[in-house]
Amino acid sequence: MAAKVGIIMGSDSDLPIMSKAAEILDLLKIEYDMTVISAHRMPDVFFDYAKSAEEKGYKVIIAGAGGAAHLPGMSAAIFPMPVIGVPIMTKALGGVDSLYSIVQMPSGIPVATVAINGALNAGLLAAKILAVSDPDLLERIKAYAASLKDGVSAKAEKLEKLGYEAYMKEMN
Image (tube, rainbow, N blue to C red; front, side, top):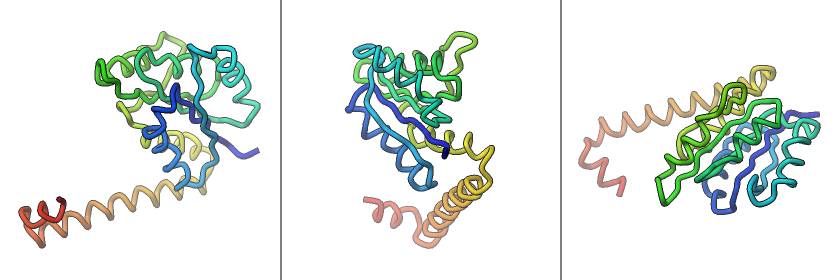
């Protein structure tokens, strides 16, 4: 069975953020499933999801949540493999509430936590976790990193050629 990543979020309003994890997993050719699930509103369904994730082949779960943000921590309490929490920006407290809720886990229940709205990095971290035992995936990650470097180098060359004023005009 191929290693898979589970991507879960507490609300469909989180989808624009969480889709970034799916995009990087697609780019790196990693299988994943994505769903909306609420630890608060449907605890029985959530419990079944987290309890059966290992037998479904999941090696990592990426859980995005805002506000009280219990989805990542509860996933980590049930799922025995890595969980990556994505704090979602909130209107009330700008996502700091989500960040604190996810990052302040009790001893024995770790959740790797990325930046507020940092689902792309969550997807990349999941890929790096899987790459520990997958040399082909590791090569794809290295190629992705090289493409980032190439992109920055191209921008630096363009800035040096055009000067900052012309460069900024092209940005608008």
